[in-house]
Amino acid sequence: MAQRPLIGLNCDLKGASQGTPSFCYLAAGYFDSIANAGGIPVLVPPTSDPDMLEQLLDRLDGFVLVGGADLDPRNDGYMLHSSVKPMEPRREEFDRRLAQEIANRKMSLMAIGVGLQLINVIQGGNLFYHLPIDMPSAIPHRDPHDINHRHSLVVESDSILGRVYGEGEIRVTSRHHMAIDRLADCFRVTGRCQDGVIEGIESIDPDWFVFGCQFHPESPAASALDIRIFEEFVEGVAAKSGSLQLAGS
Image (cartoon, rainbow, N blue to C red):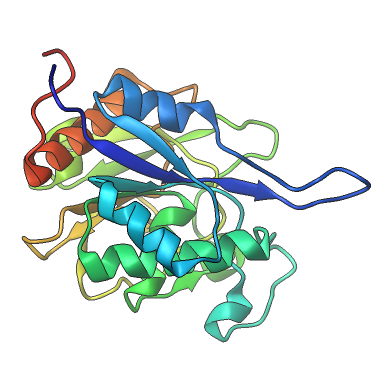
């Protein structure tokens, strides 16, 4: 039987309230997409034990940093704007340690939504915290009444996203109000909305297989090409880790 790569996914966290205990959860689109692409999804809850995290990462072949609520600007020395809805502090604290450890290891990584924003911050970049204020000319990148809101963007043909989507304009599912401002030096832009907002990045380091998308290919409104991006990731992880291939085999 072919050895399927183990792909970690961080989880969202809802804090305890009114007698309801805190709990972890994850949209099914993330782990279904990894499983359908030939990987084995491994859900990773936020832990405060660094040894546990290191031992877990030792056993994984790659990781997906998933989307979620907003990063708290105060953790990077900025003021909290009223438009920012921070994620649970326990999740953000863990995600930051997780992203730093992934970067230290040069572990194969796919970063989605706030996951893309986080890896950019961890590597020295920064963010726009509210596009309607920071980029008034930007098109709407989310619709509070439509979780499957879509807009167009243009991908670079000589990139991972370009291999998946081809050259030219594509349409993607978008639901963000924060975005990359200054890109970390270790990345390059591989997808950009026509208004200038960065929607795709990848590493310039040939020894680090990592790419990110601000949009949501795991969405229920995903296209066949959106699903293909997970196959590209799992296949890349398998090649990097020496796992046997995979989906369709």
